[in-house]
Image (cartoon, rainbow, N blue to C red; front, side, top):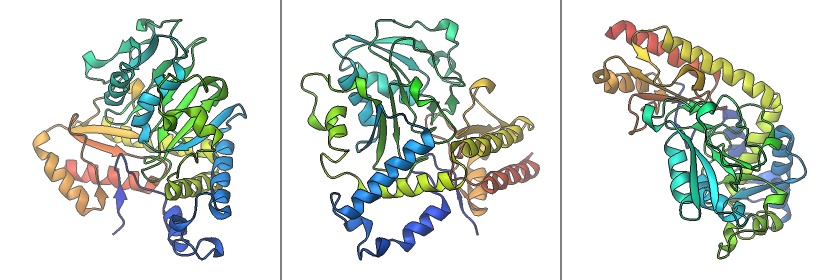
Length: 359
C-alpha cells in the first residue's frame, strides 16, 4: 500500500531523493565513504556544499549581494538572531502577528528590543491576515518581521508586505521553494529545512550583505551572520547530511522545471483540496478564503466526534499524519512540494467516501 505522509514537519521527501540518497548511503560518488562520515572540510563534502548553494541561488534567483547560510538551531534560533543582527542601534522592531510562530518570534524579540505590534489577527483566532489598512508601521523600526505562512493555523499572506525603507524579514519555513519569490524585496529570509527543503537539523538563511556586521554587543559568535558568512557556514561542523539531502532536493526541483513549475503544481493541489472542502457540508475550512495556505490545509468535520474514526480509516488507506495541531484541532493536510498530486487526489477520494458513509 502506498503511504502518503501529510505531516507538517518533519515532512515527506521526494521519493527520487530518498532513492538517490539510499544508493549513495554507503559509498558516495566512489569515495568509499558515506556523506555522514565525511570531513566537512574535505574536498568531497566541500563539493557537495558548493553545489547545493549554487543550485539554491539558481532556483531562487538570489542576487550576489546576498549571503546564503546553512545553519543549525532551527528557525526558532532565528527569532533571536534576527534582532541580534539587525537592530543596528535601534530600539524598536515591527512585527505582524498572525499565529503561533509569529507569537514565538515576538516573544523572543522582546528580550532584545521594544516590539511594535503592527497588526494582529488574534481576535479572530488567527483565521486571517489583518487588512493592510489596519497596520501601524513604524518608519523608524529596525526591520519588519512577518510569517508568510503559519504552519499550524494554515494562514498565508497573499502578497509580500510593503515595508518601505525598512528591511523586511520573513520566516519562510513552510513556503520556501513552493513558488517563485522576489528575493530582492527582503532583507532576511530564513527557513527550517524540515518542510520543503530536507531533513530536520538544517536552517537556511538568506541575508543581504549590508545587514551584517553590526550585531549587538554580547551576541554569541555562532549567532553572528557575518561570522557564519565569512566561514562559509563552517565556523563549526555544520549539519552535513541534512545539507547533502537539501542539495539533492534542489537538484530535484531544477529537474522538474524550477519554482515556476512547483508553484503551478502546488496551486493546483491546494485548489482541488479546498474545492472538496467547500463543496461539502460535512467539511469546513476555518481560514478566510483570501488567506488560505497552499502548504498547510486545516479542515474540520461537522461532527468532531467522528475525528478519531476519520483518522483511523484514513490511516488504513495509507493517508497518515492528518491530525490537526493540538491548539487548533480537526485535521491538517500539509501538501509541500514532495506531496505528489496523486496523494492529494487519494485524500479527496477518501474524504468523499467517508462523508458518504457517515452522513
